[in-house]
Length: 406
Ligand SMILES: [Fe+2]
Ligand SMILES: [Fe+2]
Image (cartoon, rainbow, N blue to C red; front, side, top):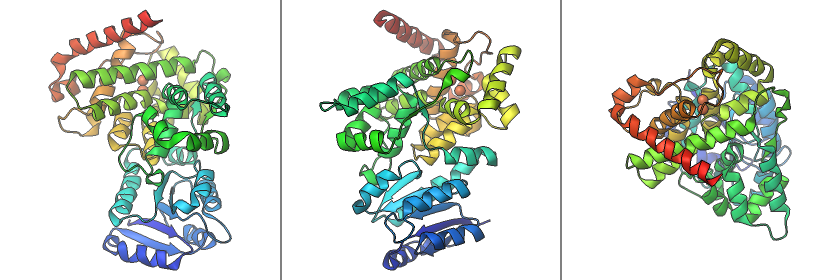
């Protein structure tokens, strides 16, 4: 079946320009062009649309209202804002409903690349009902005390952006949300960014304040319903995996941008668990009980019960949020790197797979969970088997440094 995109803009000249510009793509993509939200809903009802790109300011139903309806009625459709800077306030009000934000004018290459990336995410998550649930997600749960601290800081008259950046950098959910914003061309940055502190500084005080206080980009979740489950432990494990992954990348002589990507991919590798806890609560409680009782790995039981795992769920969401492809791949395949079908180049997946496994091996978080050491066949394929003892030494150094600080 042909891929399909729907453009919504009340400006006919804009639609004509898009139609001309994207004509070379018409072999692969069915393209629909409509001038209002109402017309868009008719097209969506009668066609198999994969991606919608909408303007924000339109008479009658505006882009934000349209996205809200699509989010509920057609969660399978990827929602992208294509808007001018004059619509800044409207975009800020829709930051949770849209998956991505593009700014006008936008080149054919940018649109094509955005569409292809959005479409290709389908290969990561094949479970349709899970896909619909993930696609509706507006926010991921943050650690309650970090959430309160960040809100308090931005509410202060003399709040400090550096402090805000530090708090956000300690929390996977807040980090993912900020990277979603900063990796959208609407906010004016044209290269992928993976450093959360840098992202906060680039967005600046006013945008950060607006995102947190008005747009409610961050949220918390009541984890007390999860007996024996600690979100602090998950966040600790995530940060440790990020640190180990970046140390491994540095040790392997990777450039600074790759080291940053390895850190962030490590820090975010288990965000799918936040999705499971907050959106698949009943199933997840059952999964955790089975894991403990039968001493198995979490992801194997998740697959058995849900036909998917936290790896694919997290990768799909962060792919929708336009995080760099290498980070998304690291999330998707962190338990089974051999399935990624990569060559032999060192990537964030290599670092995160090893870091996650070593973090579990060297610091037993839950003795009832089965261990999953680094995949020997993958390391052999990558020519990295002999590096493993040195990577373990790096981990030990990181732990003793941490304990020294404590
Ligand atoms: Fe995992
Ligand atoms: Fe993990």
